[in-house]
Image 1 (cartoon, one colour):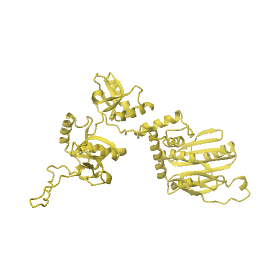
Image 2 (tube, one colour):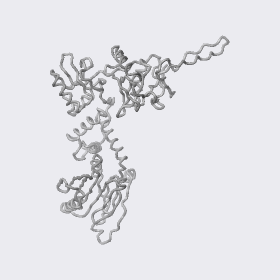
Image 3 (cartoon, rainbow, N blue to C red):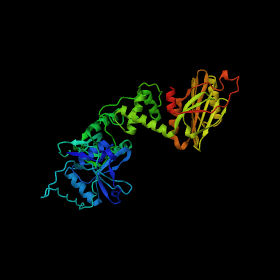
Image 4 (cartoon, rainbow, N blue to C red):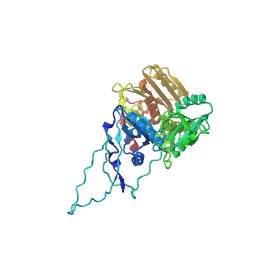
Length: 485
């Protein structure tokens, strides 16, 4: 009986001494997530004693053999490829001192043969294990809870190497193919150029598992990122690589498609990501579908649209936490918004305005405004916003009952929205430093989504007889806001 040790305790065990300048490894595979990595490592350990892992970008883990000298690695990789023991796209890498290689957990027999007894009936002392004769690091194992993977005791099969490619485009002329390769690498940096068995030249992306290649190619076609006549092909069908590519960072799709989140949440998340400019109406349409495809092609986290949207919503939630967004209830204007309160500090109230300036030199500001009136009052308020320099050199979008202003200078980006609702002209102005443009556009969307009236304003007609008191704004956590709803 064999069991896996180490995965359930803390993953792999790092061995910092393995990462040395001048040493090389043979990279044979990459996996995302501990379960997939464990399964792949288990297969490779059945063939090789020097399996190591190391971190790759975006949550992937590289699986390799080594470390060893570059000369030794060069000889060994050719031999292993010629014997068909490692994938044909395996390559040499020199991690360097700043990359911690990790000894893969070993697969050890869980049940040993009983020791033979001495002549007098007592158990013989076990023979001490000898130190390894070479300089390869010893495998480290950590016992964990039992996990039967192979009750019959047979060695696990070797991991199947990915052997499918997305064949994107083919050319008879090599010069045309080289030019196309440059263009394709703007979208897919990992593509390579292959000489087909019929002597044509093809742009290919891979290798991948067959199912993974099929899923992603279907997604790329739907997003117009791949031609409609592109198809998957095996390594043998691709012929000979003349300009090597690299295995793309494309994860497997889920075994079963996830349930699509509510479309209004999807649209808000897509707008936050910069893909969607339509209305938040919770209905699917060409703009929403195009935005979903753009997110999947851009991030490449899953070929399944529902899974990709769930990941996007999670990214937006994490960003909201990092930005310190919370509900702000402003008693002077009677308005409420979700805003980055760590970056703002209440300054003063002035007639229809509530002013929040920068906190701790953040360079941010927020102005809320509200007064009785209609379109003309809204136009007057927008003119005041421009005259005060809050939105420099504005681009105006004026529609019945709504005005949007966008402007910028060397230090700030500004966005203002105003609307006429229930006989009041009201809105907000966001001022944000230019060195954080991505956050500015996302915050503007958050303010627009959350903007609401929660109570009477100081300049309501029924309040004019009494002298309004300056009230401090109320800050409400998102949990408290949810409970209130």
